[in-house]
Image (tube, rainbow, N blue to C red; front, side):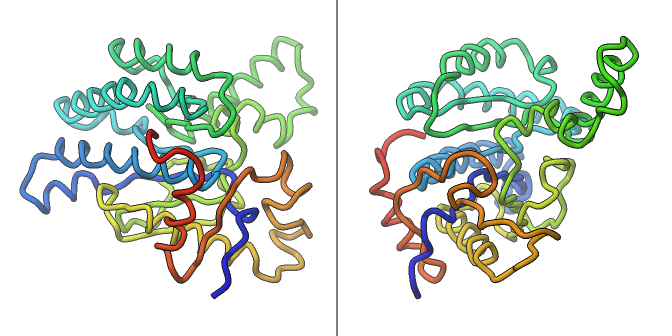
Length: 285
C-alpha cells in the first residue's frame, strides 16, 4: 500500500478522552488510578501529534458537567492537571508548543491557575504546534456566552443585529481560535460528541474507538488519522455541498500548508511511528 502524503494530515485534531473510570474499575482500582493512567496517555499522544506535524490538538480534559462528580474525584483530576502542567512546562517551551485553555477557567482552583496562567503566557509566541486544553468546558455554554456577548453589543448600539452571522459568532468562540477541527476522535466506545466543539465540528470527520483512553496508543492515533486521510482523499466533487480543494493542500481551507514531515501508512501503523520518530526530538511532549 502506498504511503499517504503528509500534506493530507488533519491540521486540527480534537480528542474526547473517555474511559479512565472504566479502565480503573476493570482492574479493581479507584477511578483516580484511571485518571493517572489517562494523564500518561495525554503525554504520548501530544508527543506523537507534534512529531507528525499536526498543527493543533484540542483535548477534552474536563467538562463543565464534570464538576458534578464526587469531590474526591474532582480533586484528584485537578491535582493531576497541576502535575501535568508542572512536569511538561519545560518540554512545552523547548518544543515550541503554544498552550491555550478554553472553557470557564475561572472555576479552576487557584493551585491550578497559578501554574496554568504563567505557562499560557510564556508559550504564547510559540508556533510549532498549539495544544488546547478544554477545561471546565461545554460547547453549548460557549455558544450561549458568545450569543450573550453579541446581544449585549447590539443592545448597546455597538453592533447592527443584521450583521450577526455564522462567521461573526464563530469569531467569538475561543474553541475556534485554533481553527475548526478536521478530525475528532472519541475513545471508550461511546459514539457521541458530549458537548465538545459542537459549532466547529460541523464538517469534521469523526472517529470512534472501543479503546479506553489510558490504553490509547500512538498506533491508535495513526490508524484514526490514516482513515481520515482515506476519506479526505476520496473522489467527492461536491464535498459538504460545495466543491473545495483537499484539506492540507496549498490554498485549501485557509492558512498555510501543513508543516509536516513524514507520512502515514494506513495498513501499517508501525511504519507511521517509524517515520514520525524522525520528525523532531524524541524527548518531551
